[in-house]
Length: 437
Image (cartoon, rainbow, N blue to C red; front, top):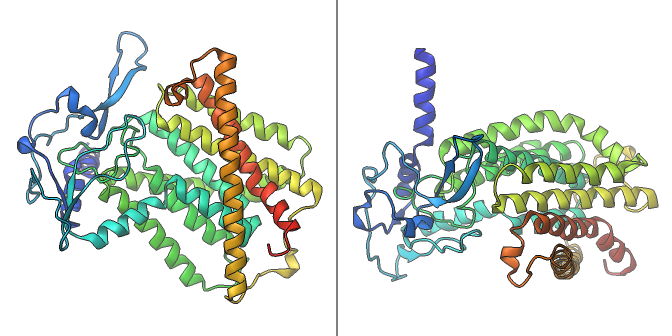
């Protein structure tokens, strides 16, 4: 009993929003909370509080009936931690080290822009902003294609498999725990974009662990480079992403720790199975049917876990992209396109850095991104209007239309499945016909 009570006490400590607030204070982040920081927020201010609460219907099955943003009560709620100053009416003077800024991007669900805060250490602000971007959509849609088009398609398609499973399991687990974001106050919301989603575990921490370490283990022995340097870079990548989520006020320390451990467990199971999975995807005649049905069924399962939120769309988007890349891998193998290097040619050596190499890589990347952007815009315009017309759902307000599962699911799958397919099939095929690519 004593050990279990100590464990529970430790878990409460690691989940305490005041621990996050203290770290932010050390890093030079100051909130502009007014009114003494005490008491519970009014409903009109709920979306600025940063945590989610859920009204449970105990008389029925305990399922979630309503989800919105609000202030989650905590044992310490109502007072700022020692040393965390309040700043009401902070200036917008950008001179010197300190300045008042707004949170990163609006809340993707509510449109809330959040509350201003002061940054007294610009270096840490930009460092952790970069770190949190390593787990955002913009990074994924630039990093994976660049790696695929310019470095190693074999490693890239397997890395995407890992990313899909890690992110899918992480998003679904969030909706099982349904833990709220750290309460604000005392936490300062440096980022607002994912503020309406659940927090446990941190999927940023999961992807920030899985991507660099999976990349390290997949390339170690396949490419000639310093193993020590590769491990250090993977560790620094992981650490930067994890710490950035606490700095942003999006996760408790416990959320991040669980995310890292969860990701490690998934890697231990998935990495040894990648050879068999990849061989099946490339060679099995029924692979396309299995790929489509598996990714669709996983999406349907995740869509039934809770009411609509941005995490549902993100999950479908990830699954659609993974299905598109897997289908393109199968088609390439059938057509004899983009063959993998023979085992006798391994390990591969890194090419010498030159102007021609940089120019070719930049040209491929820019041209490929233009094709993907055009694909996404075209498929988005066609899919949403077509699905809304078929289902007789008003399509004037795209945001509201996409909140219907009947629209969201086919929209995300078709659009991002097509984008994923073109990443590995259409774009490299176009490159093969261009002399400078």
